[in-house]
Image (cartoon, rainbow, N blue to C red; front, side):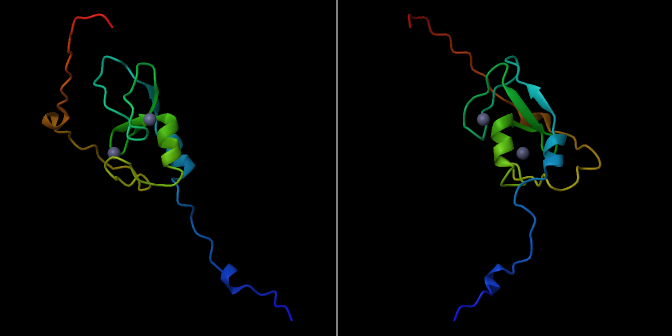
Amino acid sequence: MQSSASPINAQAPRKPPGLDPAILASFPTLRFKASAAAPECAGCLSDFAAGDALRLLTVCRHAFHTPCIDSWLRAHTTCPVCRSDLDAAPAPAPRHEDPAAVAVDVECDRRGGAG
Ligand SMILES: [Zn+2]
Ligand SMILES: [Zn+2]
């Protein structure tokens, strides 16, 4: 005797784990400029290069390579750096950034030599 009933298949449909594409699309893309400080992309752990296409998470002001963050947000709804919830509505009022917290040291190490 065979039974065609599968009680395991009775799960209620849940929201997909990734970020809503509409929210993702709301984050602006920009070109990285070499003149700015060059942090690394948390998605691929590579330094940004001039002309790279970045996506800026306006919720927390973190930027990543567009393909890196797009791929990440297919399975997550938080910023990979600060874990800000990107699924929530944007903050009603912009918060003041502490200028002391954005100190980035850029060392220009000039070493003569062939190579
Ligand atoms: Zn990247
Ligand atoms: Zn962040």
